[in-house]
Image 1 (cartoon, rainbow, N blue to C red):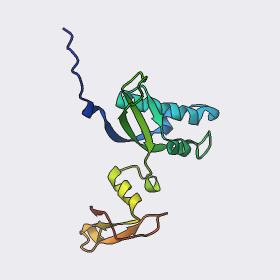
Image 2 (tube, rainbow, N blue to C red):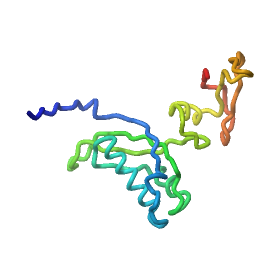
Image 3 (cartoon, rainbow, N blue to C red):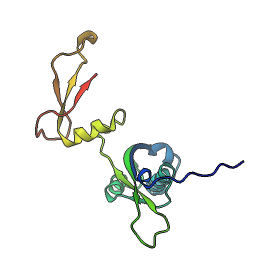
Image 4 (cartoon, helix red, strand yellow):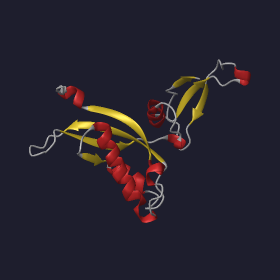
Length: 161
């Protein structure tokens, strides 16, 4: 027998998630003059599968980051935030749409917590405990300044490594 589909609530429909998209494997073997256009199509396809909406809109900043190195040299990985939002247009075919925006990642380090990167972007430095000599935990924090950011205030993030 076929199971009946349950109706989803409108509150659960509006959601925001962060993803790291590996573009290098998606444009591998693609001819040079089609690489960045294909990467844009792949991001749209990824957002469609992840959020289940056919209407996908890309942020202009994301588009600029994809095209920053030209048509041939696409970034290997890119971190994006996909927001599923309600469509306010009266004549819209679908009730929801996906909005894909760019999330900056310092030093192209895609491993780890996305929240850490956001905090690092908000402030210029953070505290780190641990990593001492011979595996002992460091008692005093050390301040690490992110490359490319001006120091503006106190440390914001403590990481117990």
